[in-house]
Amino acid sequence: MVGVAMFTYGLLTSFVLSGASHNRRLQRPNPMMLERVGYVLFGMSASASVLLMGKAAVMAIA
Picture 1 (cartoon, helix red, strand yellow):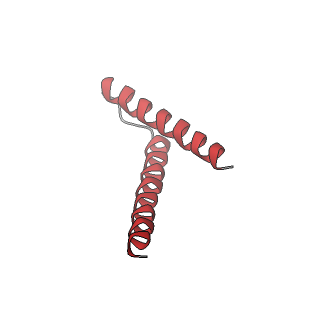
Picture 2 (tube, rainbow, N blue to C red):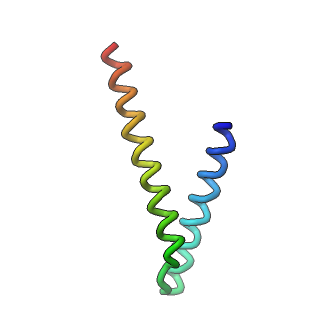
């Protein structure tokens, strides 16, 4: 189950980043849906980072 989630996350991230860079090259604005998915992926990455740092800190203390 985790493998499917990681694959989906990677696929969405790749799609968002390639779409954004393509639009930047063509000097076009990004569609609203692309920006929203990008913000959701950014939030997921930031949350996972904070949670994993917290877990590492707890394990270092114990």
